[in-house]
Amino acid sequence: MLQRSLHLAGFVATCVLACAELAACSSDDSRIYDAYKCGNVAHILGRHEKAAAAILKAKPFLEKKTGNPSHYMMGLRTKLTDDMALYKLSPRGQAEKINDIYESGTCQTLYQ
Image 1 (cartoon, one colour):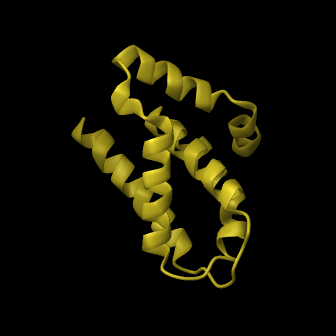
Image 2 (cartoon, helix red, strand yellow):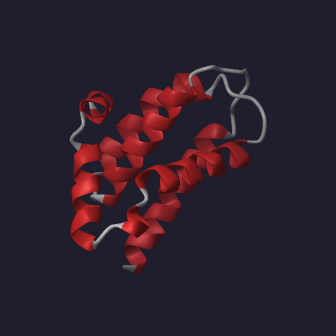
């Protein structure tokens, strides 16, 4: 469990670092959010290559963002937590929700 927490912390840190070089404004927040969500569930499932592929697809949109990247990433994390609402589900429900997101067409496109 500690190792999974460390991997998740590393994943989030990688995302924050990827956002550190942001320069311009973008209206593609939903694409960034989708990539973040898909990357996060892939990471939870231990599919780190898929997580990296999803984040890489969002990089062109991330590079257009301005402002504080840490604040932006915290906003993404909050939105993801609220949208997924895993805390309201049983362990089985959590697993099903994570798998449903992972197997969605949006995520599968981002993983390619």
